[in-house]
Image (cartoon, rainbow, N blue to C red):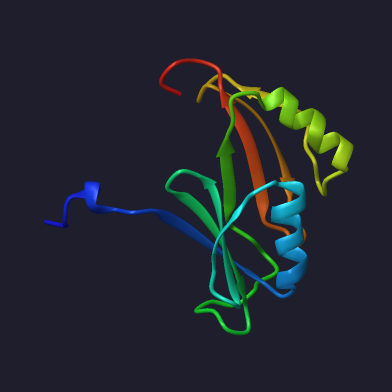
Length: 129
């Protein structure tokens, strides 16, 4: 049996980039995420307490950049409509319409970061969703 999950300290999802400085500017200036850990060729940003996204220079990381990104970074926020207004002002790449998915209980939209990773911003539309 694994150790108790209460011992976990944080979660990091790593994404791989050809142009790390460009990705950093996007996550800092557009997404507003604070840099939590600077490892040089890997920059780790806090999304919320315990959840982080790591931006990795693909020439040095464990994986390599790929043109197809079967990964989506999803961030749950209290007011998705405000985020959508902000996203429209920023004219983000591949910005979707604001949509509701009653089956899973969310209101959301998606867009791409500078190298094609899809980001979903969502709010729950019901308790337990």
